[in-house]
Amino acid sequence: MPAPSPRLIGSEIYRKSTYGPKHPLAIPRVSTALDLIRALHWLPGDRYLDSPRATPAELARFHHPDYIAALMRAEAEQAVPAEVRERFHIGARGNPVYPEIFRRPATSAGGVLLAASLTAAEGGILHVPGGGTHHGRPDRASGFCYLNDAVLGLLRWCDLGLTNILYIDIDAHHGDGVQDAFQDDPRVFTLSIHEGGRWPFTGALEDRAGGYARNIPVPPGLNDNEFLHLLRQAVLPVARHLRPQAIMLQCGADALEEDPLARLSLSNNAYWEAVRAIRGMAPRLIVLGGGGYNPWSVARCWAGIWGVLDGREPPERLPPEAEAVLRALSFHRAAGRNPPEHWFTTLRDPPRPGPVRGEIRHLAAATLEGLPDPLRGVA
Image 1 (tube, rainbow, N blue to C red):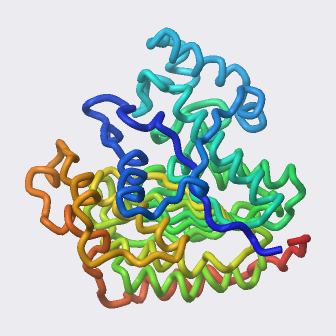
Image 2: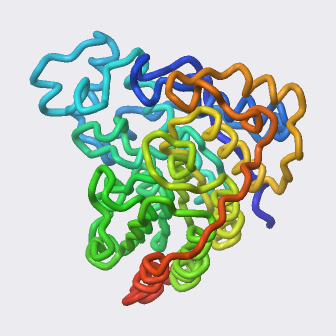
């Protein structure tokens, strides 16, 4: 029986939900990507699933019940006492109290849990752009992430019997919460490409989490050619070696050149090529969102990812309906003062090629050293 066509899980909860006017996440991301996909007529109604909200019991598979209760109280009261800020980092360290502080991340988690359940049973591809909160900790918020939907989805796969899972993270920031959740766990192998020397200042090349992780900390200015070298000489060989039953790919869009919170220089072509290459490496694939703090670059990247998953080619010029979605955006950082015209009229960035530095070649080669024996499960 063939796998079902790719499906997309989203929610209206992301529309007009922000972390506050001065926060990097005071921008529309998931809602804009969905609007853009629909404006391109790329999303038949039967291929879209509305995300459920994860229940406290489902969240407690990874998160501490006291922390879940604190998030729910913070949403109800829109304030937290000092001891809650200190213990759970709610309302502190870049994790503000905002109107949907529990419902929004619980919806993201519910979408990833649904994707894991569907793919475990049926195989196939699910795109969950609202997921990817890879910094969340069992008992505290971290790095704008209140819950860790990626960990919850991976655990759902494990609970449903999968024993050989590959998690790939191409966000500019190291996927520390996911790696630490599966430290020494042979069922989940984590592989992260991220900017070295950037928050959370983890994910060194030598950090292998008990043997079941690889980290590729890249230098500033990473270009498309360098990313593709890492993809072809490190990521894909790891996947071929492990022969996973399932892959979860976190596609935080902050490695794009226009992003204000990183110093990498990728075009969205690099992301799309990664998705295209990884798409056929396992019978089950979940593709998440993640970081990304320029509304134009995030929406265009994530819309294009859905296009790749569904075998669609972006038009050279966007149709008027899609262009209107992008022209309606505003961005109160420097990049938003004079946005280039192609941010409104195209989906595909100009390529950003460049030389492949020796450091990149070394990182790729080191990634393949000492890989564990492939774990054979029932695909």
